[in-house]
Length: 113
Image 1: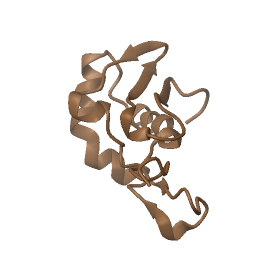
Image 2 (image 1 turned 135 degrees about the vertical axis):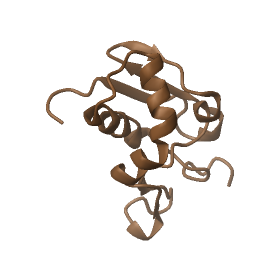
Image 3 (image 1 turned 120 degrees about the horizontal axis):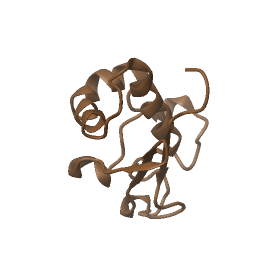
């Protein structure tokens, strides 16, 4: 995908207690409201979520981009349609790429340890 990502994503918490946060996502600067079941949960994207050894691929989990898009296409299509976002492959990829660096898992911050 060429150019800047039209989606900007962030998780509202950092450090410990990531599980008490929520997604903050914008499309060209306009806030998007995720469906209720998605707002306060990890997105299941692919990465290594281990506070003790974040570079060890043995701890990697989640779905890589293509698989994640296929798994989540229904609610993403509804979100895009409701917010006037073109239903184009590049936008689905851009959404994944925006959330992936901010995704998390329970225990990935060691807040509950």
